[in-house]
Length: 77
Image 1 (cartoon, rainbow, N blue to C red):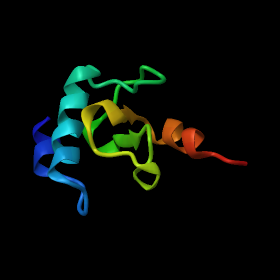
Image 2: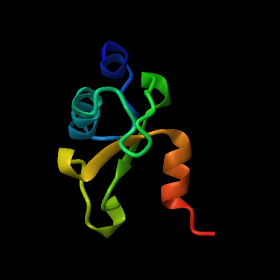
Image 3: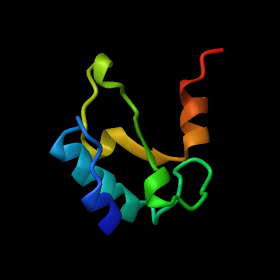
């Protein structure tokens, strides 16, 4: 969690950074879909409702997943 605190994602809100840390603890450091252990520097934080569709950086709108799961979520083809 210290790594997450010291390495926020540039261009994202403070709320996003705080909730990313909280989710890591809340999900026990595991991907919400696969259950795979997440290393802090490989975390992908997915918005359930995208910002462009009215979503926000609230805890309830975010979920931590692996890179591969994140790609699958956004796959359109």
